[in-house]
Image (cartoon, each protein chain N blue to C red):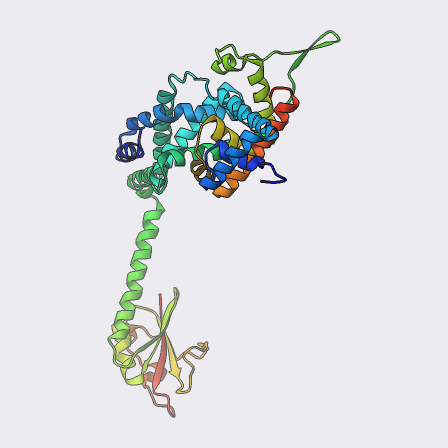
Amino acid sequence: MKDGHITFEEMSDFFDEIIDTEELKEMILDHLENCPECTVEYDRLRKTVTLVGELGKAEFQLDGLTDVIIKSYKSTAFKKSIIKALPAIAASFLIIIGAGLFKSDLFNNESSNTTEFATEKSSQSETEKVVTIISKHEGAKIIKISPVFIEGEISVENFRRLRRDLGFRKVSYRYASSSSNLNSQHSWRNNIEEVSLGAGNNPQGGVFTYINDRKNIRFRVHQ
Amino acid sequence: MSDKEDIKIIDDVLNGNIEAFSVIIKQYQNMVFKYVYSRFNNYDVAFDITQDVFLMAMEALASFRREAKFSTWLYSIMVNYCKNYRKKNNRYNTVSLSVMVGDDEFDIPLTDERENPENEVINNDSLRIVKEEIDKLPEDYKDILILRDIQGFSYNEISEVLSIKLSNVKVRIHRGRELLKNRLYARGLI
């Protein structure tokens, strides 16, 4: 109540029957019976709500709406399933194409590719062979493997046997000092000599001599 | 249809029986359409939006948490969709369609030749005025009066659908009704 009259909010709540207390409800009812002003206001509210409610009485024909919705949903769901499957489809497609290319003549060309491949294979085998030979000799160390040579170091007493086992391969060698750095670039300008198996000669007159503390020979097997 | 029956149908749909959802559509299509039509006053727009609302509900069905009634959840989708639709379409300027004949300009009449049941209701001048005045209300008041006084939703239902407190529902109903009442009074209707 305000200024001796019912407020619009109280009227609206009363109209919708949501007044909290019986006491207030009774009070509003009593007041409406006795106050012409509030009665007029309440009547205007009632007419307003009633007129608005009349607008909701129209009934629309919505035939076919259900079918349209169900069809549309099924179509969208199908499209979404295709989109979800696209990565898998693309991957399968690539695998099939890849397999096809692999089996095709593209990889079975009789040109120099085959020769290069074979050469490369045999080179690899040669390196492995040399490494295997060196490794079998006591005290032998492999220092460097390059496409051009395999460099190693071995004691003087074991070098002869190693040289023999390396057979036809071209070998350069020199004395290695005890303080030599395995990683440093040695000058091969003072190579002792290149020796072939058939030479039958020892380097420097055929005698390996211990020079001071030089107990090792640094060698390179050329590839 | 009770909420339990709604849940049963939803479970059916989620198990793969899409067609079962048609029962739900038939149950609620009038309610949804009436609300949307009240908002946009255009049959085609209301029809399209009604479709979209049900499609959204179907797509989001798995996320329906069953804490509220299904109808409340559906109407929330409906109200939010309409709000977003209105926002999106308010970005575009409307252009009047007219044709020049010599120096004269004539508007191209756009008429909907279909039978519109609401026309029968609002052929009555009074109701035409009421509709005009409702359309002029601020959106929040228009929404709430449509839900309360046209659709007949309870205060609690409105609170859940609009995700606002009950006290706010009451305040908006009070203000919306008072504003409309004063305008109808000013136009000599009440």
